[in-house]
Length: 112
Length: 115
Image 1 (cartoon, rainbow over the protein chains, first blue to last red):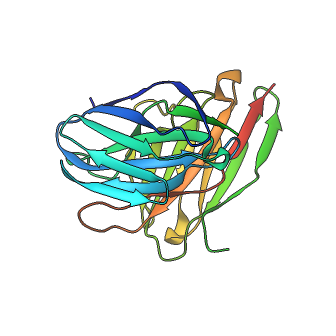
Image 2 (tube, rainbow over the protein chains, first blue to last red):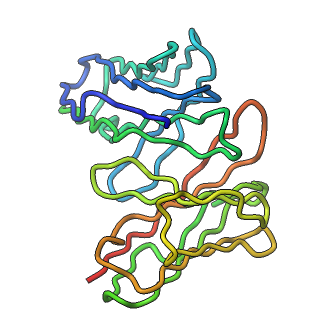
Image 3 (cartoon, rainbow over the protein chains, first blue to last red):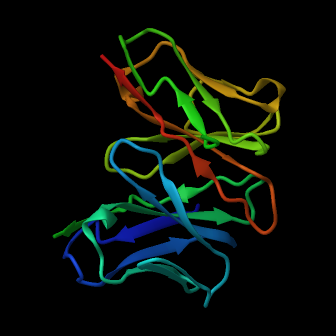
């Protein structure tokens, strides 16, 4: 069974204080690893897809990296508008469709 | 707006009533997914369609839940005889089938409260 564990559950940062969020996963064969951002009361917003170990992707202050067991979302010099819940999800090769298995998320708060 | 849309955004119902939600995917997307999310948890897969065919259902999906996607366009999710445990955010997502992986884009969700 596919499993995704995210840590920490919650993270408070000061504006400009860089940090990383962790996503550990277990999947028989990884088709893709996804990062989403979710604001309260809204649906998840797509950020990145990573396919193979060693891959990196960047968008503004965010950078996602992937190893064979983990993914990290690095946040550089965050701003208050980066406050949200960040969700990690995996897509396995053996599933007939494309279901995503999500972690429970990391709730990020950036204080001004 | 060409994103995924869901209707209604909020639904309050009494235990035992039936409810139906609608999802309109991004127009060129042939795959449509339903997920359920409770407070503090990540979304949990319920079912998915490719065009009009329902290809996969979660083992967690009880017989009270049914989904359709007539003509491969919009989709409906019906919950019969609602229970308080059905209270959650119901999320719809759509994607276009591509290799190596298709990216799922989510709608705003329907928040269900069962009293």
